[in-house]
Length: 271
Image (cartoon, rainbow, N blue to C red; front, side, top):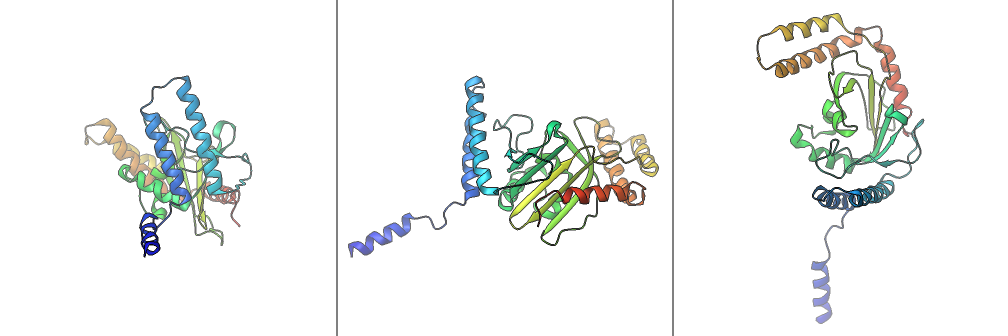
């Protein structure tokens, strides 16, 4: 009887579901965020912060596994580059980050579980919770990497590899100031199995302004309402990019942009 009672106690004491490797990473990341977000910033704290990022990088390498992206360094590091909650750029997509010098090309490799958790964390910011919708939203490309805003101008109709369950490419502008102008950045994202790959290339393609959309912009900016100039510009930008997405497939440069996006997709380790 005592043996039976002991077995019952052990059964109740053992968690029904052991923590996944992703959850272990997230728990550790959150503990570090709590620690550093209230810590006094000094050389000792920065040293501890770097050590924490190195530890998280090690966990991510175990989670994601070996990654080879053509043209990018072989060894990735944590794409989450700050654990101080108040820092600019806090909250990047959890995963291994890769970049060329000057960040002309940047990539992130992660898992579906980490992606879904990250989308939930950014839900309060208007991030779509369905993966396909997120991949088609400028909010994903804005929050996933770098510290600068991103305006999506058009989707590029790439051919999804047979081995991938999803593949999306967008054309846009990234920056900290005015985001209106000929788009030149192409970002591609793909899912294969439980792995997610994201590649962003600035100055990837040359495009041109579209007269019909310039007309839409001027008309929107000429309106008296809303009186707040920033709100009026936001509305004008929304109308302008919607026009651009509609008109882009008819432009002479569009086929070249699609071809460039397809070539970027082929750099990812999709088999």
